[in-house]
Amino acid sequence: MRAVRAVLATVVAAAAALAFTTTAAQAAPRPTPHADTQRAAAGSGYLYVSQDAYWSGRWCWWYNADTNWDTINVAENANCDNNNRASMRNLASSAWNDSNGGRPVALYIHTNYTGAYACLGAGDAWDDLTGAWFTWGSNRDGYMANTNDNIASHRWRTSCSAG
Image (cartoon, rainbow, N blue to C red):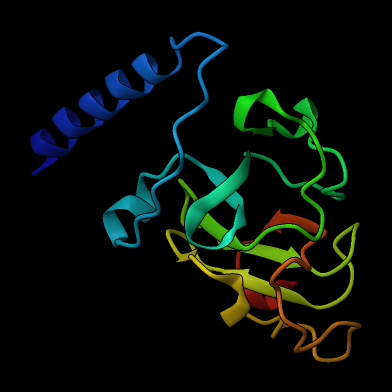
């Protein structure tokens, strides 16, 4: 089984290397969410979001936490399709936690990790955020508000309850 995983890891790494050799004029490939335990353990390490439900429209990805989605910046190892670094604050309608360490990600209603938050588990994807709510932080502003077009910051967590 380890040999099979090693071969699969090599194939995935080779495919990823090829993906990064495309020219700047080409758009990056659109993310394809997977929700299985093997993918959650060996994911890319990125949080992906798209502007429209079911992964249509503009999309962005982050490797590190981001205190303010107004500006997508290199310091967060973040980018958007076509190298666009415009705001994604209060625009996301799909989200996918492609964690490579089994970490959940907290999606906050306000900047600087404030207000209520939604917790997206490792490997989980929400294709349409109109069905997701800020259900963590019952004593915080925005508790039980809808997440669609309402996320302003995010950070990786060791558990959802540590918000």
